Amino acid sequence: MRKITIILFLLSYHSRIFAVVVNIEGLTSAKGQVCLTVMIENKNTLWQEEFKVCQIAKAGRMSFEIPNQTKPYALKAYHDTNQNEKIDYYFFLFPKEGLGYSKIESPFRDFSLTDALLNPNLALVTVHMHYLLH
Image (tube, rainbow, N blue to C red; front, side, top):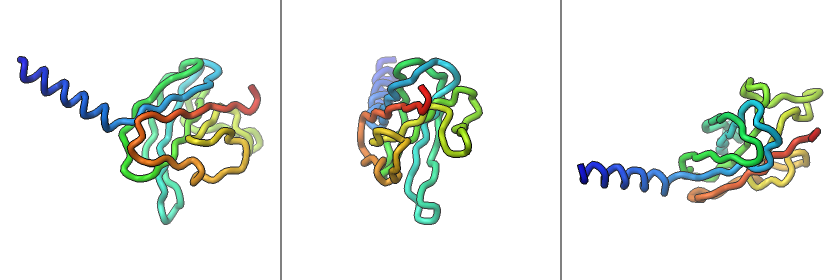
């Protein structure tokens, strides 16, 4: 029994070392869900969605844990208030829901996803959620 406990502890410790904690801050409500997308550079399409994970929204701040990436990546988070797993827009241009990117102070100004790139092996990342009409 003692060996099993030690092995489970080591597996848990190993998985925590190789994970990134992503804090999403600035959520205005607990309505719907928050989705976090990991995007990687792809020579053909420039950027591709590596994977996406969604959790029930919490007002204020919430955290995700994602696997550590082996190459540079960017994070996109959005507050999916109607739970349709996409960002809804006014007039195809302005987001109706909260939106945030890694290393980007305001997603409503011009920026490139290259500006949002994170280096691999980070243990903690914060993404600030921004709302156009809140």
